[in-house]
Length: 265
Image (tube, one colour):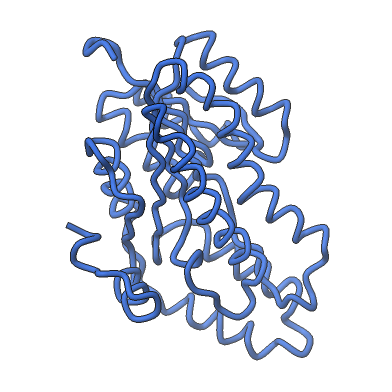
């Protein structure tokens, strides 16, 4: 890539939390950034900082086709895809309607797959690209009330690993980021969903415990994850996975056996 051409990045879920921080950070790093989300009105700060915004719903195929089409029409390339859009559909498996379960999988997994499909031909044509999939420590461990969320993230981990080996010969690198606790809207939405479906039945005790736990957490700023994204983008040969955020290192070390020090440095 010509050193004078700014790399082009698409960041989904950019209207809040980690996605917004990713977009703003990449703008400061010299990228041409497209922040994408359903709530386009909440991305004014990205535009103020010199980024571009577009409406994108990762459960709507036409929305995704149009978004990638616009980027290619305006920039002629796409160098980075950060699949960040997602949420936590909480509630006991017995209580969560299947329609909501399907929506969780569509958002956290199928949307990632489809948007990746749309970007890959352009990355292959330019023989370069970085795809960063935002998973979770919840893609390695599972907690009560989060069955559909964990199912989506476990699946995302496997999808990313398979994809990594498919596209490596084309100069495309796939990285998984596994956040622990991070300041965002995630915990509020997860708590609301758990209470919505399971607060008044057999699983009410679990819901109350989950909410108490969420209220007690003191979560770090999303910068801890943005630092990992930038590290993965700057690395000549990025690692398959990076993790950060509250309890991420401890949980992954004790539960999964990740060699903590070598994955953080």
